[in-house]
Figure 1 (cartoon, one colour):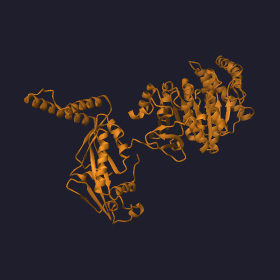
Figure 2 (cartoon, rainbow, N blue to C red; figure 1 turned 90 degrees about the vertical axis):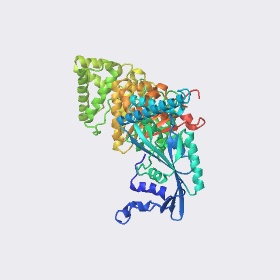
Figure 3 (spheres, rainbow, N blue to C red; figure 1 turned 30 degrees about the horizontal axis):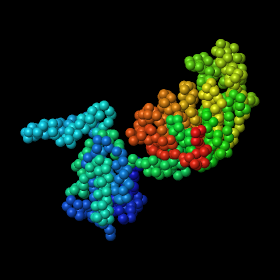
Figure 4 (cartoon, rainbow, N blue to C red; figure 1 turned 60 degrees about the horizontal axis):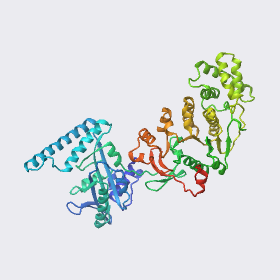
Amino acid sequence: MTILDRTERLRVLSHLLRPHQPFLFDEQEFLPNKRLRTQDYIAPWSITTTTSDGPLELLNSGDKTFHDTLWVRDYPVWLSDRLISELTDIKADITASLHLEPYDQAEGKELLDRQIAEIDMQLINERKKAKKQGYDQDQIPQSLQDAAEEAKELRDELRESNQKVFSSVLVIGISAPTADQLAQYTKRVRTLIRRQSCVAERTAYMQRDALTTELPLGIRALPMRRTLTTASAAVIVPFTTQEVFQPGGVHYGYNQQSRNAVCIDRLKNANQNGFILGASGQGKGMAGKNEIFNLRTNRADDDIIIIDPEQEYEPLVNALKGAVVRIHPSSENRLNPLDIDLEDTTMGDPIAVKAQDVINMLRSLIGGHDGLTSTQVSVLDRCTVEMYRRYAADGGKVPTLADLRARLLDEDTEDATRLADSLEIYTSGSLNAFSRLTNVNVDNRLVSYDISGLGPELRTFGMMVILNQIWQRVARNKRNGRRTWIYVDEFHVLFNDKYAATFFKDLYKRLRKYGGGITGITQDVEELLESADARLMLSNSSFLYLLGQSDTNAETLTQMLALSEQQSKWITNVKPGTGLIRTGSALVPVDGEIPRDSRLFQLYNTDVED
């Protein structure tokens, strides 16, 4: 939906009333001119009726336009959301205007009670008539029985939900250059409306009032009214088919309704952050790789960094001449969790900020089920800050986990000794993958961190360390005016640990101001949705790509994201590669299936059976 300014509104009115005349209104010329009114730019020369109940004839300079207006009198119990969208498929000049006026809940209940009372009175009269004529008293018109049942169901629905009742009228205007063409178009429109189980009638003898109601003036001049609930009104509001085509954006596939290309530039959203969610085998990995491929080829100056827990991205990264960094206990590649960028003062004192990051990482690594005590946190903070102060003053090598353990042993207190003992296996034992100085210096714009060799003991901590390393790169990129895209596959692992979840959430918030964005990818949606933090991040995300979901997860996501029944169907029992994308305020059903015989499919595919 787009709010129109005065010039745009007048342009619409001019098209409806003077369809073949040039639109001459100019805001700058109009303001100083006191002799003209806005009506002078849009009004036809004359409006007449062809017959007493017939269409209108709009006369303008050298041409005529014939115009007829229908109103939708009856709707079915279950209304499809295809009514308006199918009207737009007719190749004719058609305008649909929906007027909605809400009742407050008390008025809505009173209205329904009055309607039910009137229907009950009609039922009584029909039974009396049947008895008088010697018929069975239960032989009353089916339409009246249906009306009574629908009214009572509606009353019960309003009592059990937060829906409101609206007074409405839907009018459909049709224009044509000749009366015969108008009759043909009108017949096609009425046939289409009938296919949707609706009933439309001409506004005979009220064509002028109907035209006024049809125009975008907010005036409901017709006396007819139809009661709708919130759900029914939402279904009928145009337009059901949303299109998203943003030049320079990533091509995600095709709109399943219109078959138009779906291209999205995530930089146009409030932030770059997003999520790609899909059940196993539904194509979430391919969707992520396709986005990475598009970014790499279209935004060559941006950095793209991947955390790959299953060694799925290496073929794509190699094809795009990126770098793969393998992290595991016996790897030659090393990352130091205590790396610090003393020049990064954007978050405040870099030492204080880094000390908190180190504490949060160690809470996840050695905190156990009960976490670290407040005394242990204080000891860690003191030792970490002292090491960094000394490093800032004297230079030399950056502190490591081994240095931190040695500093804790120097404290010679019970809490410090316990912390040092807990760190021993991670500094000199079998899990010492993160105990040494960083020796990875990757200048490549596309980097994938392969953590498939990290066992469960180090998986979450390893992801936190890499994210911390990435954060320092993001900060440097910001200073250099470079944008950063981060992809974390199986990111639900971070939400299994409350400290890792907090770490991820804080990073998620920080990136917005640093020209960076993080995309979480996972198939374990059910596990993810158990986290309140994850649910909040999902519901507030600017970009969300939902592929096929299990029935349970689809139901949860439908409630959490306030999806309609039709929108929910796009993520339930669907073929791989298809789903629903939410970007900004738009929701688009997308078919992102990649041809199996394409080179891209071979790069993206990880299914051993293909």
